[in-house]
Image (tube, rainbow, N blue to C red; front, side, top):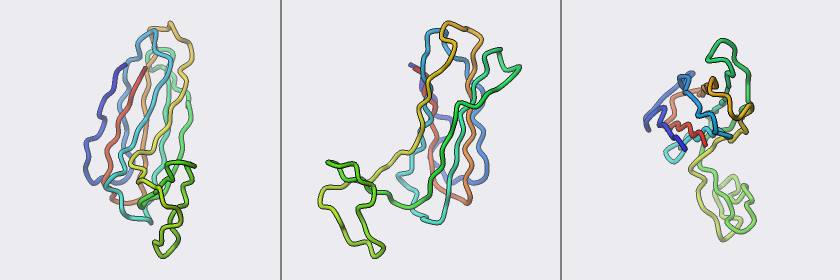
Length: 137
């Protein structure tokens, strides 16, 4: 397993490009994790995409991505319900915790190919304090 901190926790905006990383021949998944523990602006949005090359970077294909909005997201520990606070901040469920990470995990194709590379991009709508990590397993 190899994990890199692509971008340390800091205020960032615009598009952040995670440089291409070599993938071990036996690796079978890639994860992009965004630390959102300091992300308090509910109007900020984020989107990300993970890409793979099977030919040392000559061509790239999308493995997928996702998007989200800012603010503190709270998750009920027992039911995984994500809407536990109403618009006025009143607690709707008793057992909840802050969700401090967002991210995606994707299966890597062509296990055994030593010519694979992965890269990612993260796009923020406005200045937002985040940290970005890429993990290949």
